[in-house]
Length: 208
Image (cartoon, helix red, strand yellow):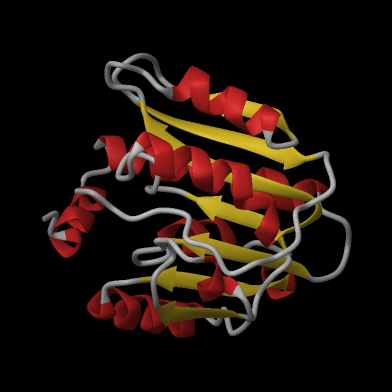
């Protein structure tokens, strides 16, 4: 089993693949906020770890006060550390809860959201669970919502297939960023179809 607390130490190296991916995700969150309509912005983050995606993107951001939502993380120590970081940053509109992000029920109080973060998820689940998650992601989304997702590109590179799955699920790709093969990738897509109704559902389980 992966030691997720030790795994986070990879962020200590600014040149690590984790840090490169983190900065790319933060850039995409800021890009989303730059075009989001005025008013509240609801967000959900699956397998959120320390919540660094949102913490970094919202640091000093003029719309930080508009952002509310729920971060879901299974490891209780990471949840406690994340909650402290959110409090210190003054991000009172964000809550982090200890729960199974692989089940839609974990997000029930926060949905539908305008921004869904699926970062650090797709490289740790089976292909079948990944496809199930993509097919049902809109159940957590408001109309026109944006999803930011990540996935490694180690062989066999599944990202071309994942991008097609998003299209089949009613999403339009906005961007796909990757330094190249064997590197992390960050995808962004927007829901253009009607969202599926929320329902209690199992999406994925980690296999690492």
